[in-house]
Length: 210
Image (cartoon, rainbow, N blue to C red; front, side, top):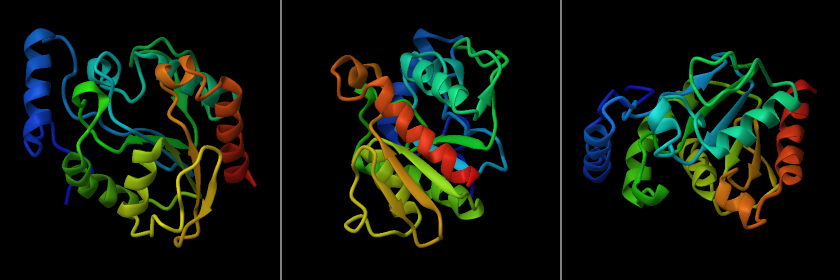
């Protein structure tokens, strides 16, 4: 079983059609399932929702090219989990240390909202990858990422509810940290502040170093 969807993955008809339309309109963009990125020996795995149309779907690297990446990568640098310069392009000098980034759904969905079936379909890939990796901690950005991670790992969602700032002990011995997604919508509406996000990421960083 593959640990990542193949290029131009055919499994979700709605996402395939949306991706092909983006390919038609923007032939110079990446426009394919976005691959995991970071440190292959990571002790912290960050799970996002899905690629943004003008972010990772354009650049081919998770959280690269939109506001969510601005906040995420600045925070990772602040807590010592990234070095180099982030410039919203995959050929910058940014490097992640002890961190691997993936998404609950690998393809860009219309209106940033994957369906339940699309989330389930993509679970086979991330579940295989997570089964092969043994990190000390996970950081879920949003409820969908939280639920996708728990189901992929065979954990009961009812005993580990999502909540910003929550921490959960998992059966595999790792710890799950929850945060609201670092999207511009959440920060503009005050659902998530920079300080709130830095607190959770900082606690996850401290945990894997302890």
